[in-house]
Structure formats: C-alpha cells, structure tokens
Length: 137
Image (tube, rainbow, N blue to C red; front, side, top):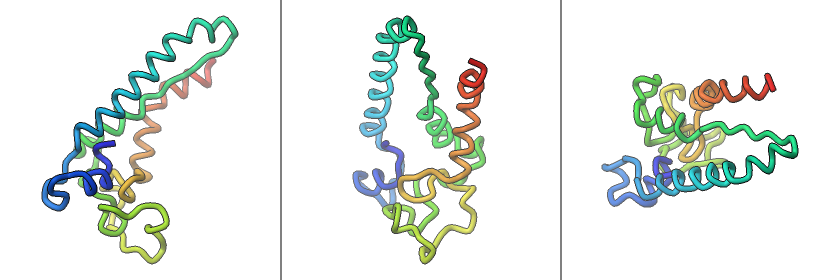
C-alpha cells in the first residue's frame, strides 16, 4: 500500500521530491496478510476434514521484490505510473486521450494504483508453483 504512487503523492511530506515507499502504510498490508494467514492456519483442520482445500499465493512479496529490486526485474520506474503524471491518475483518468510513457514495460505501475502488464506477468510467474499445485490436485 505504501508504495502505490497515489499513496506517495497524497501522504509523503515532499511528494514531488521524495518519492519513496511509506512504511506505515506498507505495514498495514503486511499485518493484514499475516492475519489472513493465521486465520487460514486456524481453520485449515476444519476445512480439511470436510474435503476443502485452500491454496494461497503470495502476491505481496512478488510485487515488493519488483519495487525493492527494480533493475533485477527489468524495471526503471517504481514510484510513478506510466499514465499521465503517474502521481494521481487512475482508472477513467487514464484513457485514450491521456499522455502515456513511451515504454510501459519499464514501469511497475500503469497508473497511480494499478500494475502494468509486465508486473502482472511477473506476479503470475511467482504464483505459478501454487497454480501448478492446484491443477495437480
């Protein structure tokens, strides 16, 4: 959450000159994921007895890795979106009339909230082991 361009723009002390992740908002995502995992661990025995299986894919760490190590993952821009200024635009504000960057594959975010196609592809590759396990079962 704290690495979304819109969050940096709205809540950073210097949104134009100090564009880095905001730890207090990122921690919300980490805490939420931990609560979900703890709850799944708690109910897993009950679900298993009923023949129910739950598969979890860790999207957070895949995206966080791309943000923390952009060059390793083939990205150049991590804290602004490709569409418009990349700081606030999202959804309908990114349309066929919007200015866009020349190469979206260098950006983690398409707009100030949503990932690019390349980011989604990398998330899929990270989730592939869980998907393959699901298909096997």
